[in-house]
Image (cartoon, rainbow, N blue to C red; front, side):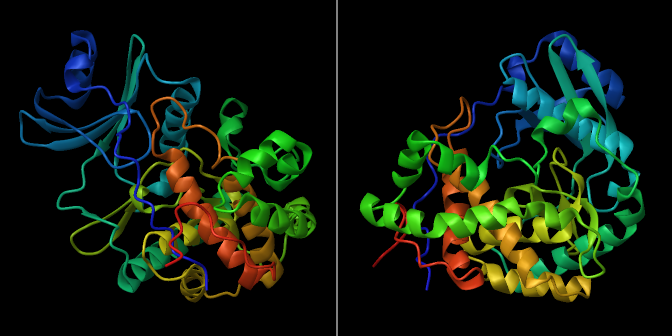
Length: 357
């Protein structure tokens, strides 16, 4: 049985601007767009991004959420926000699952996305089967209504660099196979590097074979559901309304793709955060969708997801994102344990952060 990942997240928080950091002209632009003055502003914590995000209480009593790119943010952070804004503008099908879109403003080097605040929202954690079932049903309905649009919609070229590319031969296990330095970085994640090396050398051919076959997931197949997929499903991107309905946040990476990829990328975070096992989450989603994911599709998606995290989790944290590598290591630990069951790999040795007691 895979060992649980028990290492706590770093105590450091993301480098978010405070409300007082906003120039008066930016505050004025927000107030004009919202039609009321800002009476109170509170930093919105919770995700892994250093964006300028705030819960605002307006002078007329309304509550809104604003999320912005700021002068100190990285190019990737600014592109991510631009991509999310494009998603809200171009995809009305998000309505009902995403927060209500209120508009955007640009003022100098600042850009803000404005969304309706979810009154009485509850966080996803701790996970429960009931929460996962509500989420699975809501996503199944979204995939169904977005299916027709997915056949024709393409993300603008300017925003494609952040979207997962199933045909990328310069990432994941393929990239690790080519770089001795990257391999040493990956092996540094294990308690015993020598055991990690033996597992890596033994498992790599099968993982590369599956990653190289990822293009199969893009081929039409009656058993393969294709729709718009979120590609960043995780507890920090979810809220639940008081009636239990889920609200999905952070639509930066939405793209057309196989639903199995959304599910398999999501399931390890659920298990790693104390919820049902990854396999149990997949079964629950299959029931909600009314289909069975082909086993090979699951294997390909898992090899791709594991490679995505393996290629990144050992790197230093990006500036302003102290917890990003931690959540990637948590997801990787579950992926490697799940791969022994689903793909038939040897059981991976313990990673640093896994509880062997």
